[in-house]
Image (cartoon, rainbow, N blue to C red; front, side, top):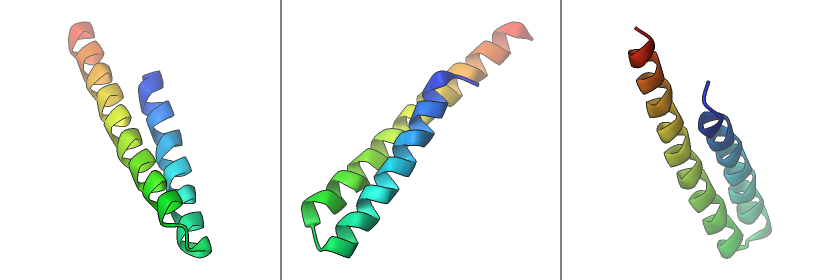
Amino acid sequence: MDKDRIEGAAKQVKGAVKEVAGKVTGSTSTELEGKADKVEGQAQAAVGKAKDAARDAVKS
């Protein structure tokens, strides 16, 4: 598993926590930061998935 997939998943979790914290505290900026972190994490995980697929294709 590529490190980008792991880091992307971690960013998604961090973003989800931030988003919920923003909702609970009423902080729109924290909520938006959380959403942005989640999107960034999803993109990074997708890059890692593509790297894994490319690596697997080369091995086959």
